[in-house]
Image 1 (cartoon, one colour):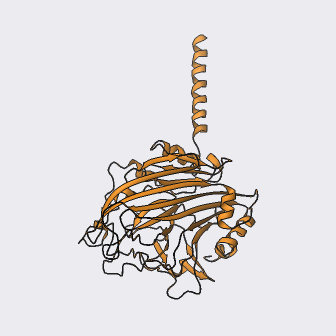
Image 2: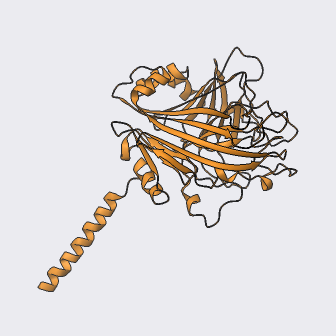
Image 3: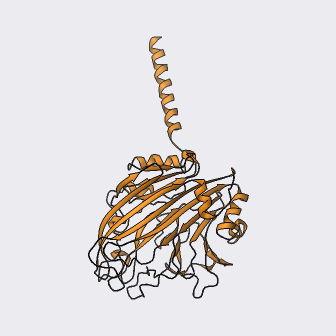
Length: 404
């Protein structure tokens, strides 16, 4: 009898432990799931709003990325795209280690006469394309962290396509925003209790820590913020533009011309289907750009807004993989929809909203900063519609019916 009781007790404990383990495992797609995954890879930093609902994950090991955020605490939706399989790769990828990240910092230009991704004299094709290690797979130094804000730095050295040696110091200051900050920055009314929100700002700084100036002869780098998000079949990227400006509205053939049934122009707003099923990239030149872009995912009722620094009259770097293009005729705002390559393989699916700084023409010791902020709103459609109209200048109805 005693043996039977012991066996019963052992079975009971096994069942209870199994149940506890299951309960401790956050659901896939939640912030808690991504936090648990990333904690196993790095001593990540979590920034929290005062009520604890807004949270942001920052990683020193993975290039000071903001990996993801949420408006609903641990059980809330995780807004950033994370490429889980890359973390377990046995060897670094020689071209790019795509860990993902809701906001990552890169440097430009990618292509062109002053490219940072191709060695001098090489042909600009994929086999010769290599992301600089400081923004690809090297860790950054954590300077300070307060629970609301984190500061990180990285020193690096890069030779550009023209052969110029660039000695660079980078700094990222990442701060979570309170609801009052979000309202003030976007100029919106209080969305009330039916809409949840989270927002964060990154201030990105590049310093010429070398002994020679960066100019139009030697070449100059730029700061480049890229936001990676998970698409749905009903996601649309929204890019407002200067309707009265002259010249082309957008470059739409970065990776071949974007099909016409995936792009639309409506009264100063460009709409781009972002379902992760067709690879395409577009860019808005500085004279046409506005300092805001966003997206709306109707399947999950998530409105995303990005806000960034913009100088309509500055020189922006051309990022095309062509060494003979005019180097200072680039775009200020970009958007990307992932899709299968010719061989059927695919990194994502994900989509991106991007902003870049002007060319950093800096003397030794000088710096240039570029601020880029991300906001997510989820909940009641009526409340989301008011925010979309106020910020992006278009209704949810017009967004969601464009590609039906």
